[in-house]
Length: 143
Ligand SMILES: [Zn+2]
Image 1 (cartoon, helix red, strand yellow):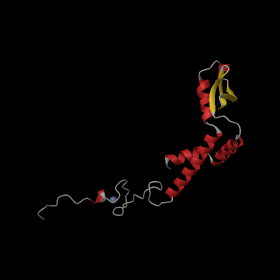
Image 2 (cartoon, protein in one colour):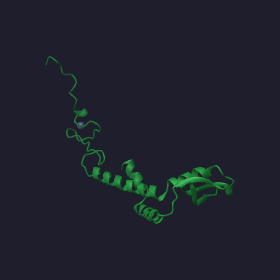
Image 3 (tube, protein in one colour):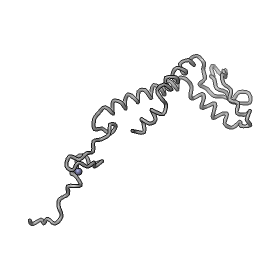
């Protein structure tokens, strides 16, 4: 299994479907910008210079003001449009992997490294002479 497959399986299909459904349900609520608001950081939108907060990060409640900005910026970056774009990219890449894995004897499907001469596997020696079939020692150039 390739590393890419592991990542694709990390988020199960039904979880991706649920994430897509939730992201699509969020349409119309702008939450793509992060900005300072009152004594904290907020997520929302900035339109014509006006701030429209829809989510306030309240880490200061726990005497932790420092993480508020990075949290707000992350939540703003992980907005529905970004999530939908990532899900679309995952779907596109999964299709590419599936297509590549259907090609026999390719990197993605696993090379067939079985040697026709000795029956062992010699990874990376495709097209080269079998290393187990070296000329016998002791022969002379003069016959
Ligand atoms: Zn061989």
